[in-house]
Length: 218
Image (cartoon, rainbow, N blue to C red; front, side, top):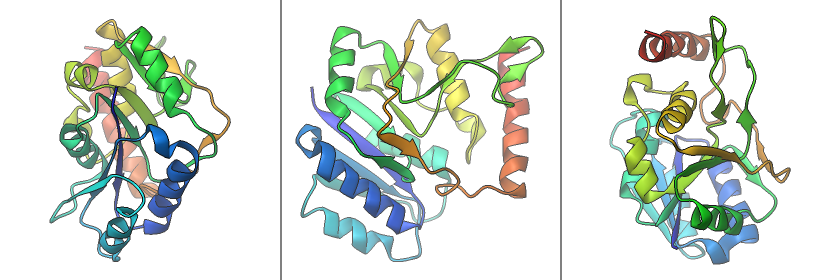
């Protein structure tokens, strides 16, 4: 099974560069394609992406205007060619191999969505009334190309970001797709780098929380 890694980014090239180095150091023999999605960066990131083509099977898709994380992720997932597609936020650090484990899990059962961390309890965002919606953290998500298509990727009503992982996990559970967590200590999420935290981000999150409630609770 061939493996594509999809990494959307907007500026902050140092994070993408570090993630690529982590992948090269720990898992390069299991990677058939790296799909970099440049969301109209204006800090020279595209030149750094070109440099990495010397070391990894990198392809680059670049937007002419900024469309946000969610649409960048969907475009990368659609453009990638692997049998398995793993989406990784650029502010993730990877200190151990993990791709072979994903391959073996999906060979056993292709109808599962794999992440590194599973939120089974109330995180402050995913409880509506008495109901808690469990979800895989969106900083790393992978499954087969067929299952991504079955899930119809991320719902773009949540663009530019936030609640897409809760929504995708809910779609998976409703569609008999198992949620599987790797729980690997060598995979960590810095957080707030791909999309900065702050009042503007919180406003988006609150809006999307209402969108999620309207979709799944009515």
